Length: 119
Image 1 (cartoon, one colour):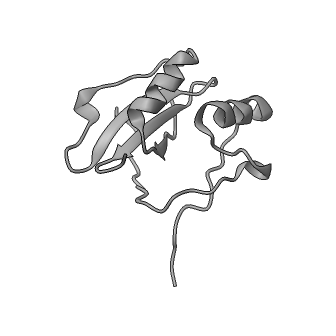
Image 2: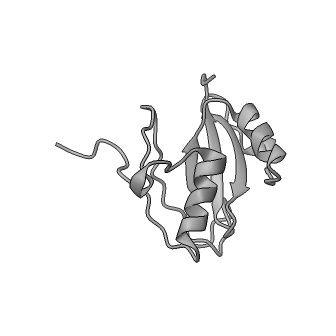
């Protein structure tokens, strides 16, 4: 008996329908009723950070991390859609994976993670 995975991620938005549509269009997240989608099995990280940690913006209480299988392809698609993508080689961790960051239209940080060995 115990937790088998993340069942959902809930957050407030100024315009919930517009933000849901953005996630569906650009990340393929939440495209069926109630915003659910099927995910592939793989690691999930649960990591509280200190209030003043600078790993993500201190004015935001959370950062969504999404596992991806083709980071370079997704980066190209996002940039073609006019979405700013931040790449910092210092974020990449040998043996763990590669990372990039974007922000949704309300400024919420989203980390894109391609685990080592994916794609």
